[in-house]
Image: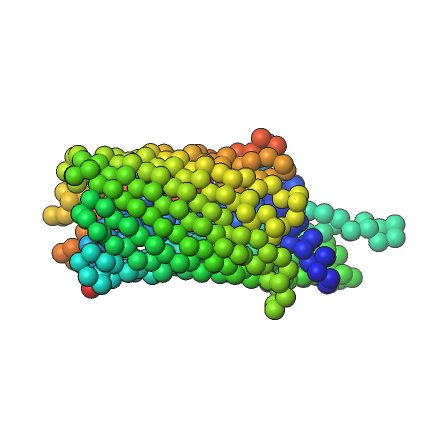
Amino acid sequence: MTMRRLSFTLALLPLAALPLAARAQGTLSTQGFGYPTGQISTRSLGAGGALAEIDPLSVTNPAALLNFGGSALYFQAEPEYRTLHVGGTSERTTIARYPLVAASIPLTSTLYAGLSLSSLLDRSFQTTVRGSYTLSDTTIGTTNVFQSNGAIGDVRAALAWAPWNWMHLGVAAHAITGDNRLTSTQTFDDTIRFARQIDTLTVTYTGKAYSAGVELYAGSAAAFAASYRRGGTMSLKHGDTTISQARVPDRLSLSAAYLGLRGSTIAVRTSHEQWTDMAGLGSPALRITDNWDTSVGADVVGPALLGRTLQLRAGGRWRTLPFGVLGADVKETSFSFGTGMPLARGRAALDLAGIHASRTASSTSATESAWTLSVGITVRP
C-alpha cells in the first residue's frame, strides 16, 4: 500500500464509526482519533469533573500533587454502557476502559514527585453495515465490520513544590504514546463461493508535551487553580515509517473552589483544548473542533456507614467533543453522582461515580446515550 493510500484509509476508517444502516453498530463519540476521557479521577468525575485542577488523583494540574499528603498509589477502571439510537432502532455496546494509574511520593515536606499513565484519547468501537457486491449479473449480500481497538496514552512525570502554604507550583513532562489496530472484515452471504476478506492495519502514535500549574489558597475558604499543557511534535507511524506529523493539543484549564464548609468542596472548572493541533495527522475531511469543557459540582460530607464517613458528590458537565461527524460537532452533556469512603483505617480509599451522558450532532438524527461506572482505588503504604 502506498503512503497516499494508507493516509486515505486512516482518514476514512474513523468516519465509519457512524452507522449507515439500521442494523449498524457504531458511535457518535468515538470519531476521529477517539473519545477524550479527560484524564480525570473517579472522585472528580463524581462531581462532574469540577474538582480536577485541585485533585491530586487527576492528572491535569501537576501542582495538585501536594494534596496527596503522603505516598499513594491510585488505579481506576471505567466501563461504559453505550446505546446508539437511529430512527426506531437502538444498538448497545460495552467498552471497558482503564483510563488512569497514578503514584506519588514526597521527597520533602514541600516537594512531591508523581508518575502517571492516563488515556488521552480512547478509540475502541465496532461498526457493522450491510452491503452488497455485484459480480457479472449477480448481486451478493455482504456484512461489513469495521473495528478499532486502541488508545493514545499520556505518561506523565511531575514535580510539585510549595514555596508557601498558600501557593503550590507544579511542572511535568509528558510522553505521548499508543497504537490503534484497525480491522475491516467483509463476509459474503454466499460462503461457499466467496471467502471472508480481512484487512488489518496497526498504527502507532508518539509525541511529547510539557505542562505547568499553580494552586492559590485563600486560607481555608477558597482555592484558585490553573494549568497549561504545551504540546510538542506528535507523529503517526506505520511500522518504522512516519506517515504524518502534527502537535499534541495545547490545553488551558481554570478553576475556583469554595472550601468554607468543613470537609466539603464546591467548584467550577473550565478547560480549552486545542484539538486542531492534531489536524496534520488526518484528512482535511475530518472535522476537528477546539472545544470548551465546563463543569460544576460539589463534594460534601455525607452520613456515616459502618463507622466510616461517606463523601457525597454530584455535578454537571458540558463540552463539545473534538472530532465531529458528517460536518457537524458532537455535543455532550453529562450529569454525575458519586461517593467515596476510607478503608483499612485510612490506608486505602474507594471512590465510585456514575455518569450519564447524552450526545448529539446536528447533521444526523442519530443520538447516543451512555452510562459510565467509574471505580477508583487509592492505597497508601
